Image (tube, rainbow, N blue to C red; front, side, top):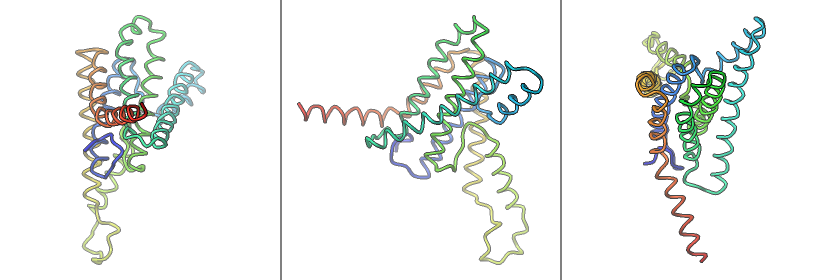
Length: 248
């Protein structure tokens, strides 16, 4: 099956979520090593805007607002790409967003070493590019899973894990057999745990890779994303070529 194809089921969605959680963890860890700032934590960005206004640090406020803005724009672009692909009934309905994400990571990887020579541009450009990328990715998995899966941050994941653990610890023996309100959802708990693990392992890989490869490590992440979209994109290209030949 295709993780980024148009045909979906719960199993495919989960596997795509695990892969994207790894990418998000790696991108966040690598971005932090580059500019000492996480780029998918919009809660922190809004808090930074408030702090910056009160403390008179308006450069901090503008930086945080820019990250928030680019995250929103990234999510909006994802929605446009998915809807356009649906309009033309493309197999790459979700692959286009992942391809754009891979392209942005490649751009960041290629330009990063040059931007590092210009500290005034390194931080804002890096934050905006990665925030846009995380917005793309979070919107994609949200649309694919109908809001069941998140990959760019783990606050909601950890909260849901706590809820399921609470159900597990509840004194269920007092419930009637027909009362399932406090029964743990084992499948959901497993999925949430693997998403958290994927983000953590991705963070380890990103920190290690960025430490030893520098900005070139983003090319590895981009290659992984491209591998997910090859099949549906190839199907659309082949279909277009066949229709063109028939018209000739």
